[in-house]
Image (cartoon, rainbow, N blue to C red; front, side, top):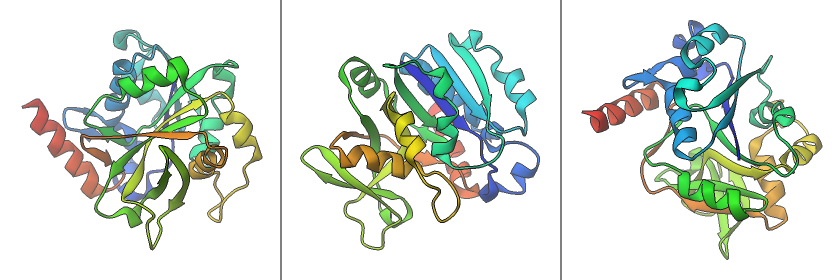
Length: 239
């Protein structure tokens, strides 16, 4: 099982903080944000991780993470030259993955209270297609929302006016190695990016998109308010 952390992007919602440093290195509680993504990989039993970053703050990433030895990981770095979407960033990892490998993909600004180990280990053994992690939310219109049937996701709808469920798709994904075949078929969205929702819907159309529901809290720490909330929650748990 290979791990891929996507920590590129420009962090426009967190400016002016991200005019100085990449958002995944901003402090959240006692640690930089990227620390928690690394710990999710460790807790899931992943040993080899590819960290996709932008050019901004590349040296700081190397200083903090190094080879990954202190984490018990083997860490490689890849550079996303310009923001082209989550799926485009994931596509940069193809050379890191061997045919038949399974992948745990994590957005570096998504923080989870609970470990994802159980689902990751089950997918590593017998998973097919893709598996996403859902969280029931009060305001699903803000997210990609799953339409569910018979234990599978039939489709994901982005920011729907009439949500098909109350379950938002979080920024953690499990894929088999055919994900790169799907990425090569994608066309840019209206905002000019390759969208991870299109990847997931390709699996859903084949009946190959399974899911787990996250019980603990989940925060997409991409705004000033959510960054503050994440820090407060984490400091409360550590005190």
